[in-house]
Image (cartoon, helix red, strand yellow):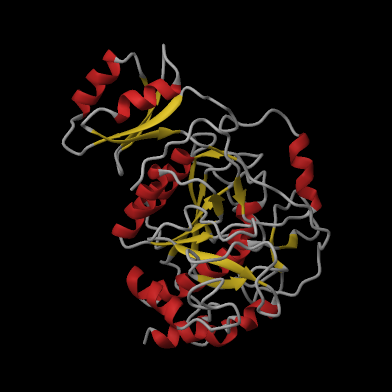
Length: 400
């Protein structure tokens, strides 16, 4: 893999949605959480496998570098550079023969676009497009199948998510309660994947019987770092996820993020990621990594959503416009649901279908094959995405 040569340019990582106007109030809240910083002195270093922890610590001590955190699963450290610039430190570490890579800790930010369509529920249309009702005759998922929502947290006591959410970890606050979803994004994703069904309220999840593992990596303003997202991925893998939903994208690759995606795939986990909302054919990450399933968004006519990314790195498409799902009850206690659009929503739909397949005991390679090979070849297939728009019923038949 090419090493990242970029300096400390502030990256915009798009939470892949077009959202409601309520979200605009978030920017006026108190000072951002600790992930919303520009700690330019941080870099990520990964040594080759044969280098011991003692050797690393000795070298860091010699270089007057402070270790801020470690990820043992994929073997990187986040270090604080002292007494020199980040560029000088990067050059120094990259020249060391025992260093696999060194790169900046990339700051990421969510991008919100107001959307006035609050309660126009057209959930039935996208579900019909993917033949979800027909798929439910085969399976609605199993409660031992876990989908990780690596995002902004999930409100676990939402009326349509009660009993469905496993509290994972909050990498923003460094605690075990990722239920405070100040951004609202993770709760919407979770509802699309696994909201309770046939309970006379709200919405139906694509895989209503599965569990959601909530892993918070985005703060109240939608900021995160590449290594924080990597930590969220490895945590999800180590805590039983069969599918990981990553409705997050950045335009510049990060080796630490690809390592985390590869770690998940090597452990048999399916990673589903949004292609991005920038109307470009340029690759966005982590979706563009080979071991991710990259998802574009389509509208009710099976046409590419105008802002969806597209091109050779995009694998499949899914409905991503007018997707009705759950939002934090504090936003609207009487009716905590709304529609959103974007590749985030499309990604959640695909993660739900992947969860149905995982519930049938399929491996990650079988799930990927079923999703891609059974996809409906709608207009744009071969140009905007490789395989077509996901069809849950056909995927389940394909897997038999």
